[in-house]
Length: 614
Image (cartoon, rainbow, N blue to C red; front, side, top):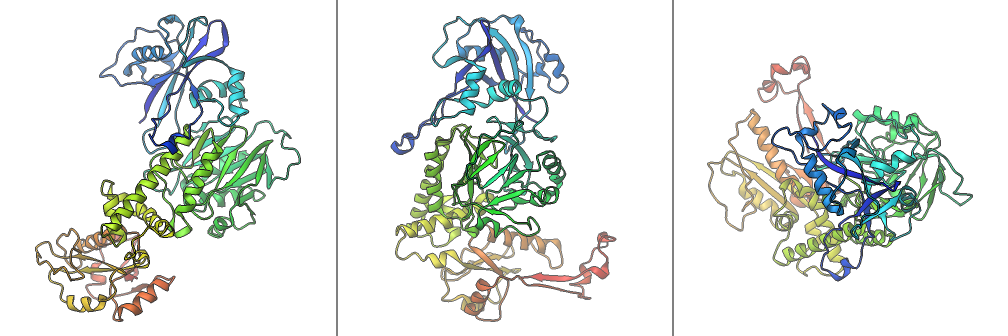
């Protein structure tokens, strides 16, 4: 499944080395003086439009030479090709083009950037009179002029977009030998920056991590004797694919130069899961990472030495220079990478292709750092932002300002929720993200915690708001058929410890008694269904309890029951770095009696155990 666009390569009849580019419409303004002061430079690209699906097949009145070669892979008769060509010509102010001269050039299948469908592009070539009067938003561009704009970039200079590069320029300047050996769809934009999305353990809505590759086909000595932190003939960034794609990663790495540099933006699994493959395939590779990142990468991923980077260092790859940018916020070891010649910025997880980034509260994520790193990126004025999840962003300053605006808006909403009486994390998340799918609340809760810390550092929190009680809580699950027989005991257990725990009650749907507002069980019932001991309904009830608890990111420890007082168990669990697992052979009905013969032969009765986890 995919959607399709049409891009026209309109060549100049007077000079076949020139083709027509159109100035692209920038995103709308923010109507905010600060954000609107940061303006991206003009972007020029091939004229294009979306292809719409027709109700049935239609014979077009325009003859496009060679388009039949796409059948049956792409049935062009199902799309509005002729109206689409007319729409594109209207964009550029050309009313008449010789219909006999249209020629199919190529079909480019977009890689799986996600989260939506890939957008494939049909490139069609035609000729236009070079002496026509063109609107100001159009210009004839020579191939060499485009290359100068792309490869000798000056901050704030005009830019050439991806359709022109992928559709025309790459084919004219590259060797016929592939730069990357992979069967996966990939993209090279800007020139020299190869992006291969690979399936990974990333968070929804994405399902891939972009493997970035620099592999210059001609190695030069342009870098000279400058003091580089690392030199090589090839570079890869964030090899984080799933084990199922390690074979594909091995093919890519094996075909690259042995003088390989590996750069890791941060330590998350979806960015380092392929490191072990590189280490096995090329143990001479140089790994670059921040020290805070490296101490979180397991020995099973990388057991050899590494070179520490902290920002400001430069790398030389086949004569091309890249600069390390320290960019904490997402984690305390997060780093970005600026490709000097194209002025494109690899931003790791500071930005994503859709939606907003989640900061990792467990790995030094920090909202103040995030704001500072965002402004640092804006000052760099990159020509393209390359996230590790999603498509390349062509309006970097606008995107970064949108992130600032979103974070400030959320922070204001969080402060308002607190001022209106919200005390716990789940209360704040439910208030601020009420219009967001609950499945996203867990990730949102991480940012809420960091916003609360940021507000505290600015002395903006109300005096009666306890950040300590907000940040830590213990979850108690209560699962019963009806009335809570030990309610009074639980009330005594929790008394005096408000704000340090969360309670979730799953009881019989027929049980309608409502506890008083002073009770710890008030408004703590979750949507419930009938439960029978020893049945799958019991597991379902436990899942519902756990799901509700997981929606609150502050629930760092889970406990079912304690015979000790609250203070004892609270201090023990909060300070413990261990989980406790119990497993035993129970010959009674509650043990072996729950064994299902359908489990055989994968699980024998002799292997069946009753267990618990705390």
